[in-house]
Length: 506
Image (cartoon, rainbow, N blue to C red):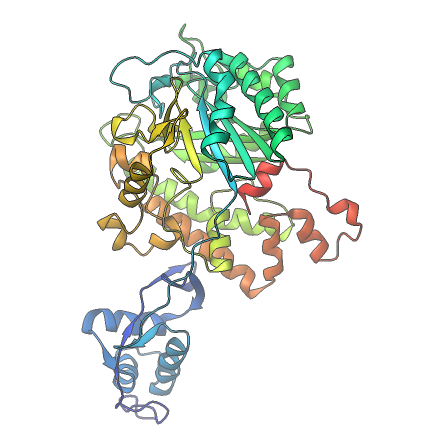
């Protein structure tokens, strides 16, 4: 066949075609194509890559001309093969005529669940120099009150129910500083929340983010009885951890945290989620491995969030290695899902489920909508990481959020509200980036978020080719086992995870 001639299946005449918004990439010899607006992922090839690149360079071309041009410029592709690829891309809605438009994927249905991140303490007993919340001082221009008074703790639940009356599930996430410096306030809020749930027919979930140094048998019993999800921090091995995670005295905290975790590891009502801060001294892969050894049922290790001129910042080769480790999480996910297990690192889960269900994200997280931060003095923020920033105050826990301030916040930090995001292929999976981090640092190192999305696409396509049913393991390993014939006893399907964890990954 004359490679320069158009295929008989695709005439030169016809309306000019342009490409829908999409992202094409290669990983380990496989090619992938992501339809940005429809939140759909496909396997791809070098021919489709050439077609999309030509349209990006030349602008709209008629189908036949497009196929002929690509065939001439791609030695491995005949005109007939190029025409078929053009037809296939058109059939998937990835090549469009000028008058055609794309119907964007919907967002997920609204939830009746909301999380209230309550700063019961705004002090910490550790001095970690990379702390996101400034050792509990947050972003206040003056030193804030050290902890929430019990008188305020006693009224928070009533105020939250009054200002958010239509929820079915109220999640309370105790935050700091170190929240266990004010365990009395935690106990007070939980007791009030339990009573309110019984009176209103609603449900409650409890979470805590702690450095683990102040855990006691009494506190462990309390967490177990109330089915707490406990987020705790260990930075890799003892030497790496103790280099920065020190007490005010200068003593390292690793041994205390490791000892105290034994109070929680075997508690059936406690769901342990480990956290590490990744910097040059410890890799992401190493951090996940070490957290698994501590008994974490899930974990998330994130790069240190500092400006590049900080000596602890993750830059250059160290940041490149971090990106490689994120991409390697695809193997971590595939290995666990194929065994009907939830992956230990859960950062890709929501993105994989977005692609599976074709749901776009127009905001990074529920901040200001289904998540709020409550400071020790009762101010209401989009989340705990915004506390102390005057521009982020949404109202008070007594009076509720100001609708105009909420709307302004959600508009400013949405993917559509940020010019840099509107140009990014990751916008419908990412939703605009963490608003607190964007507010502090701008859109620095978004490559890490794009690497996560590419890894999620790879995992999704792996199971789309093999057994899509196995992706159920991201939500419920037991249901995945049942779907694959490994379980047939209805009672064995009852979840063992705290309800909060099931909803978080749904």
